[in-house]
Image (tube, rainbow, N blue to C red):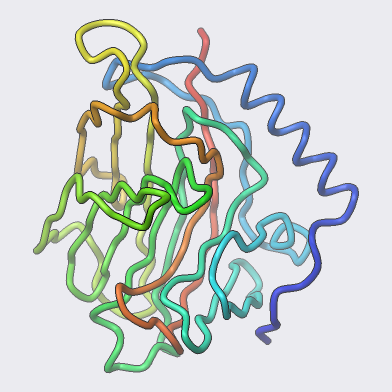
Amino acid sequence: MLVREGPPPTMPNRITFALICVLAASAAFAASALGQAAIAIYSNNMDSAAKRSQVVKLSGSNCNRGGASTALRVAVGKRTDECSYRTPVIGRDLEVFATARLLSGTPKALRKRIFVAANLRSGSGSRYQLAVFPLRRKFQIRKDFANGTRKLLKDENGVKRIRRKINQANKLRLRAFNITTGPDKGGCRILAFINDKRVAALTDPRGGVFEGRYSGFSVGSKNSASRSVASFDDIVIRVPTPF
């Protein structure tokens, strides 16, 4: 059953949230190498109501959430383009994993224009986003700014790695680590993976400008995504290893 968004996290969740922020801050450091190793600091397989409650809405005017036995189910309501959710982890240099499904509850007329996404450095309208359109076998890496503008860092169609059937799982992975040494110092190294295959590796020369620090996922469309439904599970957040 889907329900409207409820109250903010309880005190135990806030304590967990603060602890994770400290761990992320202490473990993260600049990463310039393509193969920089990372360690997991948070995971959530969404197999209980308590675990699903750790993930809260970040943006979206009308977003309904519910739960299956192993996933968080999100339904986009009226006059809403996107429903975005965040994990308890706050940090700059992070990697987010999410398994996403566009569900059959989505009207057939909408399915081709709906994306599921993994997000980093979200906050105040800015973020990096890996958006996947399953039925079109298309993905984009987006840089969204607080003023509402968007820059496409990569836009690719016909990606056979993307599973295009409704209800079928696509594993999304997005990494954004700042570069502090070498000729690309001041930029951000971005890697994107779909179903365990790397589909993009690029450098954003002005990657240090974002103030947002939330990590999470979303479902939406350029235009109204009303009545679209998606599910998310197996969330993992990693940071660069200091070893």
